[in-house]
Image (tube, rainbow, N blue to C red; front, side):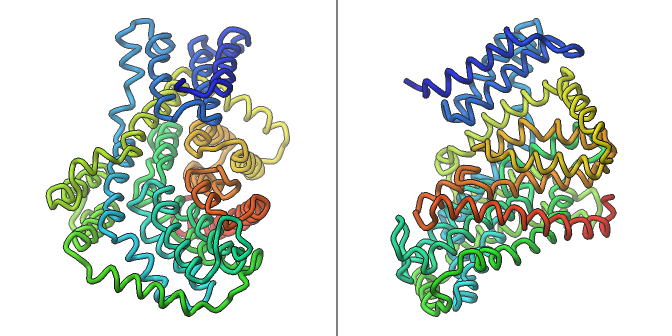
Amino acid sequence: MGFKPIPMLIAVAITLIIWFVIPVPEGVKPNAWHMLALFIGTIVAIIGKAMPIGALSILAIALVAVTGVTSDKPADALKDAMSSFSNSLIWLIAIAVIISYGLTKTGLGSRIGYYFISIFGKKTLGIGYALAIAETVLAPITPSNTARGGGIIHPIMKAISESLDSKGDNDASRTKVGRYLALVNYNTNPITSGMFITATAPNPLVVKFVAEATGKQIELSWTTWAIAMFLPGIACLLIMPLVIYKLYPPELKETPNATEYAKKNLAELGDMGKDEKIMLGVFALLLILWANIPAMILGDAFKVDATATAFIGLSALLLSGVLTWDDALKQKSAWDTVIWFSALIMMATFLDKLGLIKWFADNIQTGIGHLGVGWVGACAILTLIYLYTHYFFASTTAHITAMFAAFYGVGLALGAPPMLYALILAAAGNLMMSLTHYGTGTAPVVFGSGFVTLGEWWKAGFVVSVVNCIVWLVVGLVWWKIMGYY
């Protein structure tokens, strides 16, 4: 059987109930309500992991095409169902995922991690900061936060911990240094994910929703996002390791062996080879073009689209032989992203086109408006609800797809400055990852190594979420005011 029966049965039942049993509310088009049924059924199936998200997305595309919720003409319905495959943001993330494999294949990712540990690794706290710095350096070109935090940084963290006789798998020695480093390893991931559009796959969804809600008056570019989020992100990265250090102090405070271990691994890697140098050069080229530096110096004629930049980077790696086409084909997560991103963006887009998002936002607006708390209080309530409902989601993509557009629309309707509220919700959509051991793909990887108990994880996740929100908001409000975003 290609699916889990119980989660699939629940998803189908919810879809049918919304479609056939619940009356279409006044002011809502029947087609919009039926699209909502398909959308919610898909999200429920994703949360329940009834099938892999890509497979569920294929089913969703097929259902939209067959049921004709967007058009009575079969050919037009199919065209609508396939419409988001041309979305450039989807291809930006997919191509960046393929490029990021070069960090692993060439060893550059490990070299960067061990390099920072060789510098800062004399104390356990220093190792924590070294892990955070390494992930921040890798974040701009690793749109899979799972690949970054779980695939590159976590093996380094685990190796360092075990070299200091602190083992996972719920061993008693885990509290020596492993528990602390694992929590820093994981809680760095939500912060770095919020700092760059290309640091996690769902961020382009936010860009799209903001542009649609504001009639494209606000289009968050790679540069705008990076500048806006960098300073509050750095502030959180400076404070978070200290918070966890206080919450779960490691038994071993001094760790000179870690520095030696990192230097030993760097020695084993040897001098930087040709492929690593090319990878580093492409890395630098991507950052320069994404940051629009040529356009800043030479004028708008030299501006390169963010997705075109990703294609340039991948082309360079393919031409140089650092990556082969077989390498690209083997990056299942990249091609999977094209499928599920296209399906979810398509459904969310038509929920908006069919008027359901506006109807939903109007109803929330009316409810909160009666509280008389003004747009500041209303947006605070909305943001907290948006963030902490992540306890009910096992996917940031599903969460953002289901809730961002409606909550952002309500904030705008209540008077929130569009750019300010976009940045606040965008940050919340990443910081919410810290809450649980299933909140994003990195979580089960790090939690599964057995350095942290469930209770410790949830306690640290909640505390860090509160601290991150306060720090990001305080620093962000000052920085965004200086930058003229509100």
